[in-house]
Length: 375
Ligand SMILES: Cc1cc2nc3c(=O)[nH]c(=O)nc-3n(C[C@H](O)[C@H](O)[C@H](O)COP(=O)(O)OP(=O)(O)OC[C@H]3O[C@@H](n4cnc5c(N)ncnc54)[C@H](O)[C@@H]3O)c2cc1C
Image 1 (cartoon, helix red, strand yellow):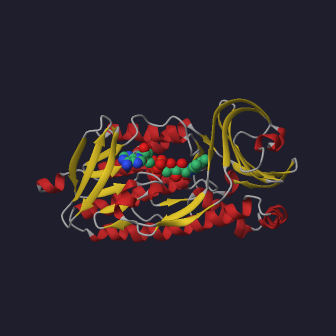
Image 2 (tube, protein in one colour; image 1 turned 180 degrees about the vertical axis):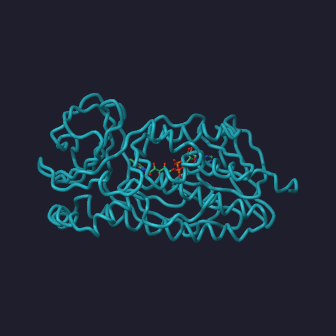
Image 3 (cartoon, protein in one colour; image 1 turned 90 degrees about the horizontal axis):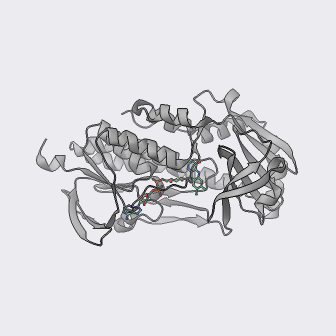
């Protein structure tokens, strides 16, 4: 291998997508650098659910076993309306694969980081990408350290895993078209007194919106809702206690119009964002990383056309997921009134149909398309 080929591939962003890519590439023997603008890993968690597809991919790295050991199996989803259960899906009985695991995203990231460290790769923190250009031979990146000093480095390939506001995507001039829902969504991690089953996710069809509730650990639950006062109408009559973390976010559905340009590719939230319904964002990012690692290992060995192949493979899968999740979110969010009526009257009956159940199961499991690479 020539000296130029040994120059590390650069991964921008050490969220789950970037960490997973670094791990998969290291296993393929590709030298990597991974940088993150943040000086510390995040302690709060957006994602709570690692799906069976991610566990399948992470199986060979010892990470899946640790996620399963640390988290808990999610046995099903129960839907509630006006104080009673109106529908449920039993993952334990109906899913033919490993069950999804409930685990805070911060812990999934920590386990990925430890696996990466075991391969001798350290995340370079407090280093942010400012700009990049490319020619036929390489990519040139301008990096900034926390003290404000800048450095110019070269890389044979770059993976932009730098989240929804991706600097990599902007530097490539790639469009991120889509739409956003107008209302803010509230999020709480809080102690709850509730009799609801801790191993199931719970959905509330509320009169003015939608509510999601899932156990985190030790009696702390995640509650997300778009109604005026979601905590006032918790399913099963839960009584809120101490608030551990409170936040607010907006839901948008957007897709990059290209997933690669020359020697630079995009993955994870840098390439696609959608509502948390279906719990796909982090899991799709891990799968992007998996396919990218397979394609990039070949690209770095001379088959540059594999970068374009990555883009085509993932754009088709991720586009379908974003569209499906967007449609599901529009139906479930409980507004306007006509859609809320449809949700409240049609969904409990529709969920009993095998075709609908299969769609829900495959979506939650991440098994709605074949695995696109074997590392
Ligand atoms: C409420 C909520 C619940 C969710 N639940 C789930 C769930 O259950 N399951 C699921 O799969 N997904 C879920 N998601 C989505 C999931 O959290 C995201 O899809 C996931 O974090 C995306 O990972 P990422 O690595 O692509 O991006 P990020 O996690 O955003 O990481 C990007 C990283 O890039 C770094 N960065 C940014 N700019 C630069 C730069 N210029 N230079 C260097 N570094 C940079 C950032 O510091 C950050 O660490 C949820 C999201 C929300 C909001």
